[in-house]
Length: 168
Image (cartoon, rainbow, N blue to C red; front, top):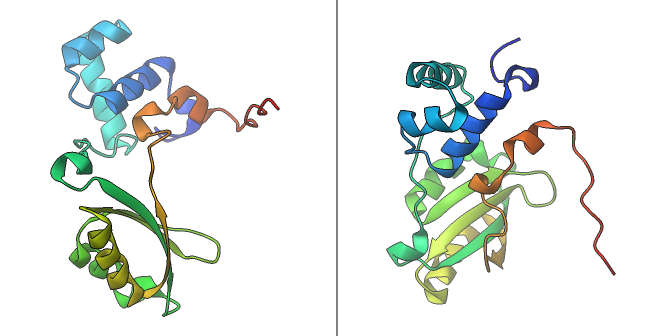
């Protein structure tokens, strides 16, 4: 079994991953103290997690609002051309700027693009740029409910369970 398959991560690996998801700059000393191992043991575990691709990299989480881009939107895109990826969609989105993320999805709309804008007029410009590529539907982001650093890695690796029912 390769590192990263569900059964190969132990509780210590999960604890290290959870801590790094919340603070990618945590020191080896702090990580070692938290999981009860030596610094070299933690360094070895991290190296294995990195080499196997479980840890894909380290990056700063940037707040677009602090950069003058307080308005975020999810733009659903149905391209005019059937195979948008083959027609340079990625390059067009990167050239557009202000694109935070783009995922290819199932359903009527093929892509969901997250953009950040200065104000409603700027958002309108971004959307207008996308309408040349395909039909769009835009949803304004009001707030983040769950972010990647909130995810419980142990629960993520368990079999799916149904969400708690809402009280009526």
